[in-house]
Amino acid sequence: MAILYRVNALADPVAAALAASGIPFQRADARSPLDHPSVRAVRRLWEAACGRRVAFHLDRLPGGRAAWEARLPGLRVELHGRSLGGALPRLLEALDLDPRDPALEALA
Image (cartoon, rainbow, N blue to C red; front, side, top):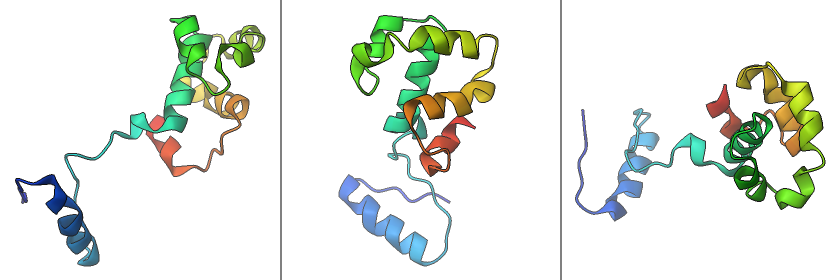
């Protein structure tokens, strides 16, 4: 089943009514879980640790490039050869993120 509406302002009342009725739904305008700031930080640190567009990613991490340039070589050594899933606990630790944060489920 689909519910189509012309005005985006109708989305919240429709979603509230569906949720109150226990009807599962998915909104097409919902943000991607990968856009969450915590998820983006993990992805950026992972990309930098893998040597991809390092300056670009470090500039966009919390604290900026200055906070990460000295730490990155050690992280690269620690994470070498690991998949993102295998590196995730160390990335979360380095970023001081709570692994129980539901937003991070997008990385699992």
